[in-house]
Image: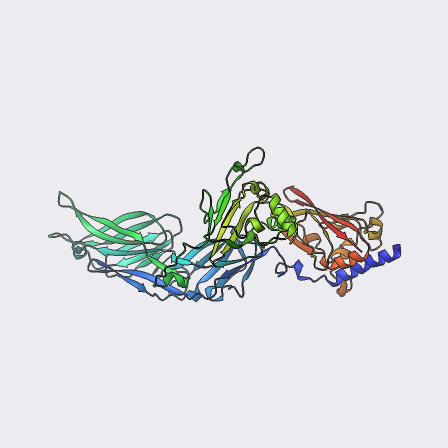
Length: 593
């Protein structure tokens, strides 16, 4: 029997070595379940709506609906993570944007989309901080990626990103200035020289949130009855921001003693230029929709369309939430279905749903026995307390103490259908303020605090996250079947050090030699057979040390593990980061032969 079990363990080692190239180890692994998807809504035409301002003899006119020469498809798009880093595959032209049929995979979290129509350049194509007739359109839009959910970006509006400025002269000043008079406008490092005949608009980069336009005028002034005299005039305009148009008028200010001064009058406003990406925003026909008979979903005492922030201050000494979270659902007939979709940027929160026998999408009108019991214990109405009812109130306040364990943004989209066919969708979004565990150990798609019985569809994909970098990763195997003695027969031990594998050891055999265990775990021995080069597929050494994230899978091992016999198998994982923070979690598996 001992020989049979050892043979099975050895078979498991060989099988895992053969699967060492599973994509779950890579960053681009499509099977990783901690990701969500980004898409720009399909089927949207692109239209441009721009109002240009002109001056016709002092009369301001606008060309409404004029279409500038702007090719939306050439806009540059950039995706940045919460730390301001450009994400992988996060740079593309709008023409190549991710769509619902071909979305961009992103890890769950908060991101920012930035779009720009281009950069200002000189005649040689070099980037400059000021240029004639060079409006730059763009936007900055934050968004959240939730696990296994698609975030659709729509209603995107690009506005002017630089500063527009023109110069005009009063009639009496223009008559007194020489033709070679030049007005120079400067914003930051960008400057332009406006001649007396210049009619173009200048555009300037806005390097700061609030900027200053410096004005320098040099030329010759001829006063009535006097000889021409050269002059230099300076002034400035404060608090100018991107997207503003400054129409600067220069005029003569006469004093009582007959002397003159050049003064500045500024007509400033936010330019009404928008680039609209949503076809619905430019449809002219008004469509009246009667919503009076549809179901309603409201947050009592609040606005359900606004994110509800809950902080540590909202809990008393007994960990009870003092902020009311109550949702009312009402119909004019009766509720036929109430589908809830749960999403979050905290993977642990999604994984915790399994503890309550819930999935990410469920119908409160049709819950099975176990899930229904769990919901009833939590005080959440379901089944006949919802189905056929005209109104239902959901008091979620007591659940906030459970949600408090998961810092991040969590959304609960309710789709209510009544007996008359009316449908309403509303999303309750709760931001639970706090810090997510760091470092952290995640069993992807499962609650690591539960023990799972091996079944054909069970997956065991482990994600280690440590923003400060991993200093140490220890895995201790405690198994009814895989004893330290049996592991030793295949050159393994029960305490594995994945950062310094040569320091791995056996708790029962002090003579265990760990000098070659690295090659059993991850291969890479120079003189080894290339077909066995990756060992068991576990990352070790530099593939773990100082990394912010490490992924590995033992899914292919499960079927062979089951063949060794019935029992419980615990893999105690301890991670320490470079700041000394430590977390220990236990992966618990049960095999039944």
